[in-house]
Length: 287
Image (tube, rainbow, N blue to C red; front, side, top):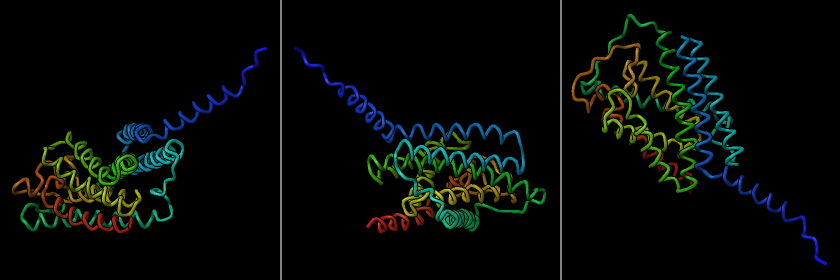
């Protein structure tokens, strides 16, 4: 008589399929795409809402967008990548945010002062400006961009590439992509994109490696854009109604031209002076 085949084979096959399915979701490129799609969708929906409102309401919508984007990021890494998220831990969030804001403010203000000393910028108080309106119109887009771009570039993409090819590759690729992403902005040139690679991509990547959290990079990124906007300098080609009117004179390599301060050689040099100690500190932390 023929023996009956064991019924254990089918459960074993199902278990193998389940493990393969889980491995698929844990693959870096997969959870990066899923997380990025969720964050971009939320950003797009709330951007449409903020464009229809003004003042404090637009800031509230941006804060709500930021909360949901961070939640999507956490859920993606927790349930798909199957890893913890110490980079958005609330333990030192306040300190790291403030440190990032101070770093970004000093970086942009210092760069603007150097350009002014070299005759590139002349600032004059805009008497016609509504201070509260300018504050909100500068803070709101700066906050949204800082949260979304840091979650995408330093949060998802950087860590996915780092897991696959190591820190140097992650820093190089995210910096290049960050510069490329700004090529479509008003007044952008190949030089301005390359400048963004060095002064933003490398600086923010170095900041992430040094502090190993996103609160610091978000704070730095936010202050960068907000201070530029408050000074009345175009933010990566986007015009800003700041508290000052800025008269620009001299070569675009000094002033940044229509693209704004990021197109100047000055912040490129200053950012590298900041990035190098951060990268050294990151290497020491590792050892």
